[in-house]
Image 1: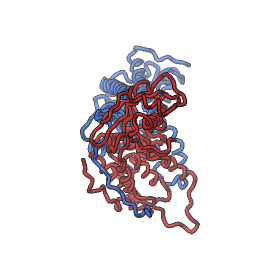
Image 2: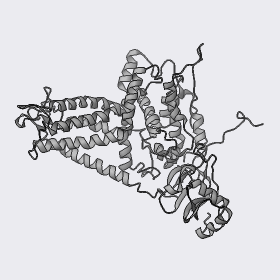
Image 3: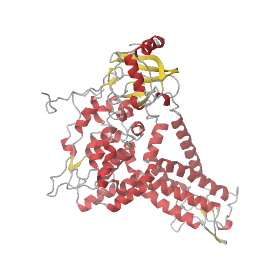
Image 4: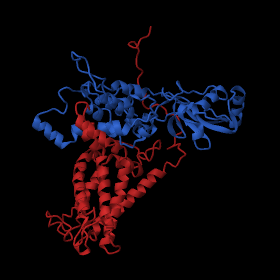
Length: 273
Length: 292
């Protein structure tokens, strides 16, 4: 009588003939739409952010306008070239090119190594694969096992640095409610900075690394009840990580644009009350 | 290669397989017919029945115009994972795909692309069973006098992964092996990453599989495009709840300078005292398996 113990395992067949048509995909839906939209939005953001980072002006609305609004692309403004009033006490006086270059390394690194954005740009730019069940555009593939893509593993370090930036942008938002020469009040600009800070916190706290560090890394939740509660808090946020990623990306650009328009005198920052 | 004219194919069907609710409309299936020597889509048109799933239509084909059509199936309830195929180019269970929810026009049904074809819609999925053997088994410590105790929150954590029905559609859609056959010896695939994650998250397990999953099972090959999650019929969050947590655990072990410094100062191993590195027991991919 045959038993499980007596059973022999057949050797695995690797390289056998595959079934199905030998073509990149049989999908009939508009599978190309998602990567095209992703590539379009990401490219638009990169173009705008690059321009905004290098233009090095109109990033701060100061006391002369009875406001204290700074673009998130330029905060904290650490360079010697910063507009008076926009920078903290610590300044790199020798750095005379755009201060945004100093700052944007962190959010750029954080988003570039983000698990969600990796999915987005691997699909839309690298076409590896462009969409599910659509052939990879490359002849060979080693994934994230070699340099430079093995550096994706530094994501959590950008997460830590990003938290520091979030604190600074939160302070910027709080400070914006105090209008110099007028007093405390609410303007459209202060609300814009607040929404921007909230979205960035949501994006950071919903990060997969955050979820892991909060409690995902433990083997036993029962032995780590506080970490379990933290994990329970961030897990629902994590489920919306993609939404927060897009919302915060678009809104941070809109925040910069708003501050820029006010600083250049194109529009007036309306005081609500 | 077997190709039958649609009109010819539909005639025996209406005679041999009475249908409960026929309408004026028809359903056209383009089914892959072939074997390792080659194949092509064969088109069949049958009267459409309300509420049918693709597997129903395939069964009507077998009962009528294509009695020699090879198809693997078992439960017809989305629980056995046997009838995986590529419907309109996307991996789906034939028994869970309603015909009336597909877009109008011919429906293509092809075998899973990643695995060698045996015949028609049947593929050789033994790659998965070979990989399954390489996952170090659950390894609890010797039982304490009062017996093993496990809290409900720890039990619930692994339940999601135990829903896996081994349909292997996640393996099929994963481009790491779907488009790069040469990666198969070094890549376990999403199904086994969730198995490893389940074991790594088990409070009683004593194996540390982080080095194994990174160095031998190809976790780093996954670029998180989430197709495995998209096709999972059990809606297991494969990427978010298994693959990324495993990647983060690998980061804990190998890419975290603070962790490394802490271990140096505290003179600790990256494997905890209760764990055993699983990689020492790993036999490696079969040397007899050709790489290409």
